[in-house]
Length: 63
Image (cartoon, rainbow, N blue to C red; front, side, top):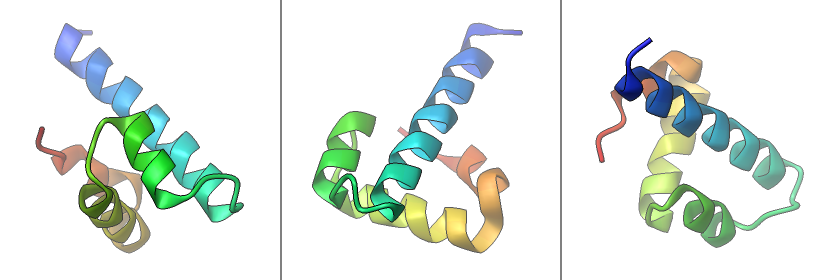
């Protein structure tokens, strides 16, 4: 597995964890975005893609 693939997997795992915490109201969007190193607007886009397309939709993240 290449380094870029590993980093992508780490980002996906972090997103899933942040998303679950946000859904359980243990984090607010600002905190989840900070954990991921993105803006709140970007986190909202991730949420929208995740809820629409599942985890596969997250493979199109651009940094």
